[in-house]
Image (cartoon, rainbow, N blue to C red):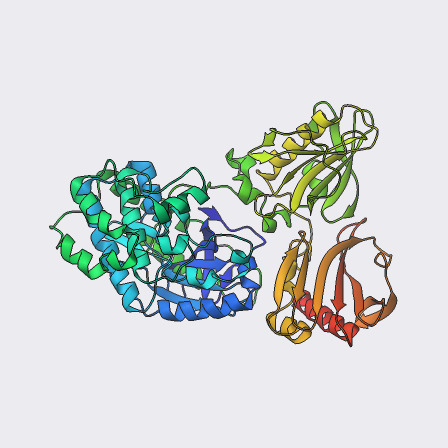
Length: 610
């Protein structure tokens, strides 16, 4: 569990955000405090999904259906907002590790504990199906082991992602190892799909492995659809329970109610083994520590969170924490600044878009000494994602770029088999100098790159050494921009235009797509728009500026190439003595492209000044 980044919002609707619990395929989960002092697990949806209007409609529908689910073995939905800039869902925060964490830390569950798990899960599935939902993503990470039994979370929410941008890129919604044959073959799903996933999950709980796992995702999906499950190592009573659940034909699988009849009532006192209970106790202590952290002040003084919140936090600390929530153990380092804790962030988290936008590339290497090139000194910057450094050895100029196009330059074919923290290294332009880059894990079209100048002999080795230094430093710090809160550099550009403005400008059915690190495009039925955050020089018009104009009192420049294209640029603010923030809006439509561009620009100006 990690504290929130200082630049992040501190509220979501009525909830005060306290810390980050983790991240998954659809979003990240935060520990949140409700107005009445209860702790909640609040899931914020990833921006790639939030920009899809179809997703929002499905999310709204699934949330409403999820509110109808109640029962002892599900985490109740408390609140949600599908129309927020970042859609979110708050549910009861459940005390306990998830099933994967428990098995990894304490080993496979004994048969009695598997039966205890099975009774809770089948009861939860019966409650979920009664509400007209199919879970669709019943996997170890969505089963929490509380002291008094399991809890199923995220029921029905995977349905909202189907047909979204996320699935459009070829991603799989759900965990392949626990999918049903219907899911693996894109067939029609019924509640029987959850029963198949339940059977696979019990095998994992009892043995530590899923029953169909192959060497690749494709092999796993093939096994699910066509091969018999691996039930070796299962106790006979567990095998007898799961085998009918793993039938290929959905009609041949038992229902949750039939499974409950087979399982019968639980004897008094039966529950988790000591290893799992120890995890719950350890998390109890961790929550006490988290609740002792000073509550971060919200970024805006408009919300009165002063003494009253401190009193609530103090009261929470004085109460038995297990009755409220526990933090999941494992998988997420407790790092804000790795140099202070000695633990670097995972590469995927360190090189995520939101974190890279916080990084001033001219701070990453300034004053750093790297053998054999010497000490780096910032020289100049021409883009928000790039900085040129001079070195103390041989007066070299080295160009560092963060979040730029990974296809830039010519691949030399060298560097095969070399990686930095699991990221393959590409070498470019090796005959005239050398550049070394790695693609970011979440978006391979973006890169972190170091380039030595043309004519530098034997520079590929030093380029890789410097790149490794950059990645190491990015994993331990963010080297934040020294800019005010209304700076555009750290922001997601797709968040600067609301859905209503986009729909009015480009037509219905629009899609917002991130482009590079600081640009976004909106494509609709009648027009397309783009917004880019760039860099300029103080006292000078933006590069390629057109005719002077005004946007709600702000000096801007308009350039219209023909009747279908129009660009508006303006300087948002000065960053330092050398740099300004420039925003550029381009409209492509038949008719009045400049009117459309102006509407977008006004929305962005208002957003940044609010």
